[in-house]
Length: 357
Ligand code: M6R
Image (cartoon, rainbow, N blue to C red; front, side, top):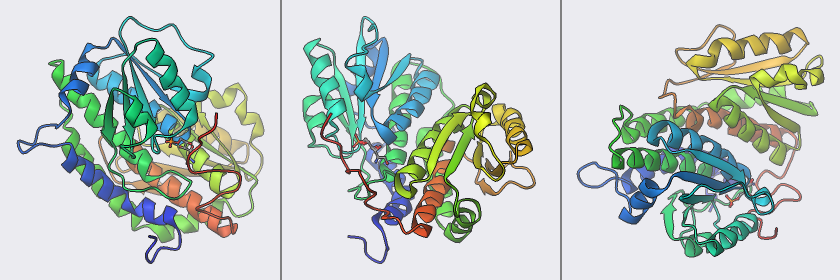
């Protein structure tokens, strides 16, 4: 039920900090250690490469999952769009583990990959919000997202839940392999949840930004480097799917290789600047688009912010900024769609779960 909320999407955006806290509880034992099915731990430890298979927003979470698993657990990861995998299967490693990420657990494109890899005899782990779903039943192992029912077609809380569960999984694997880590996922996720909650209280400010930057525009670009690039891809999907503004996300460094030709007077460009190692270069990209007339909106993180940034998120661990930086993007998309009288929860031409290939 929506309760007092005008739309499920807004309710689900607001639920995100609580979902993260729920995940912390669900994946912790009484000794404050990570609680995980021993078979999953063993499968992660035994594999020599992970193949993430997903679609849409879940694919974007997979791109960030790759960062967690490679950086923390030191296992190579490939991320594949499910619909492309079947006829473009890469050369597989000797001991692959397939990781399906799906809110619904019913996405047909992912299901067909699961059938295919099971025939080859490879193990599969599904991360899903619906434990009884097809992808969950047919895989060897399942991890539950604990996000509660997600009704709006635009995925919000499943995305942040997927990232939180992937971070926990990566740390658990690292520990199982005996790797030394300074990163405490439960503590850092708790800090991220507080930051997310603070941002959901800043709706008026974000509505104002949507009004100021996206009132009548036909297009909008998102730029970022490193993880900010992946969050930009998710921001652009959110915006296009519910407001019908043509939106694209680009890696900051790729602009000069073509995309910058699209920048005109007044083109909105949303830039993410949450990573210290690329802060200087992404700000350089913003200057380049501004010099061509772009109307830029910078979302940065406390400690890396500069005068003139439109919105500053609280400071969180650099691996977990996506959980927090996506909130202003979700809310800006929501208000942009609302201002255009779009059907926020049920955008045209889309279904909540895509059960045909
Ligand atoms: O249920 P799934 O996570 O497998 O769904 C995948 C995509 O269809 C889904 O994320 C879609 O892109 C959303 N509408 C995005 O908001």
